[in-house]
Length: 283
Image (cartoon, rainbow, N blue to C red; front, side, top):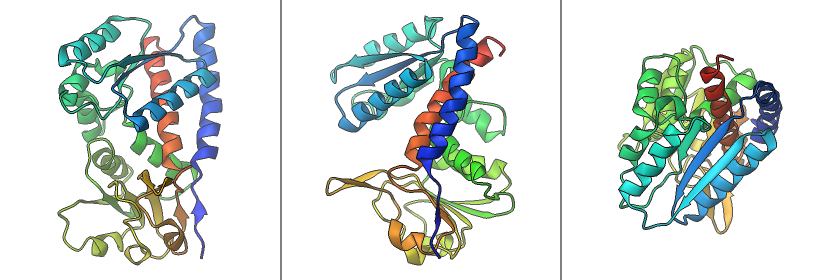
């Protein structure tokens, strides 16, 4: 059997149409959503990602400001930029593009963003509320992955879900979201013994480890739903953490790379930004 595609391009485009209407409604009431992105250094992947965010804002009518700061930016300068954005009433969402240069303390920087302006969902308050199953801003990539599953009508409740990766950005929040949907969740990582024994049990398998084509067909259960969060560049081409072609012959659903979860990440950032404005103005 060949898996059906969970197509991030199509789903992101459909969500953007909904967001355009929400933004237009806000603008008609005099509330223009504002997103400030802080980019430190010249990391090529970060530059590309920020450019894509800017384009998405333009398409939706969101006011976007990108503060491009040099590699040698000090911690104090970074924190001042965050505090100024916090104090600006026209800024509803703040995003510090990761990774930061090694001399900067990203945890401290993220903790300074007001929780209500934390559209990346990385602040301790939002992460803590997610862990308790409370309303909060959810990290964009796992939020996007869950959205794709729901849009495709894939049943989650009661299923065995395995998340490979335990990062604060993807792995942990993904596990919490699946748990909230009543899946039985296993989190695997670099110290997991006999990883394949766990992944072969998964009805829903999420790969978020940053190793190209690491998940092979022999690690996947027949008929599993496979969500590939990885974005890796090999020989100049993008690929995921899943060995796509062989795994697609076993899975029932699979996300492609590119064109899968990555598209949804930016769409969910836009959704979080619009939602932040709606909360402020009671919309």
